[in-house]
Length: 130
Image (cartoon, rainbow, N blue to C red; front, side, top):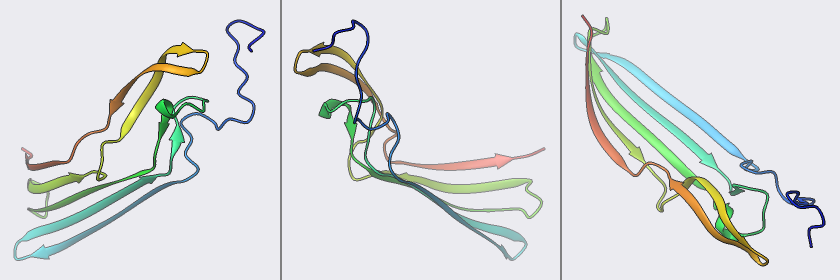
């Protein structure tokens, strides 16, 4: 029972949006190929599970996930133009980047709104500098 309206006791609950572990790593390689420059880059991000709000309601819990971005490309050594093939390789499931409770009952959250992260994506980018 909450004796003070508008005040919630969060004693013992985990801090919101604070995974116990976050890992970021990147590697890039650039080598000359003929008169051009080839480049490869890999970015890795991992978050362990976390709560979007101080709560014990599973609607506000996000399991850990990993994200990988990869890019390979070729261009001129002076950077005048660059052509890259890239991919955003996401977790093997949908993951959320935001969630918020929008309705409550005495037993917990009755409704929550959320936004999912970007899906797997592949693209081709051409940069031209004048």
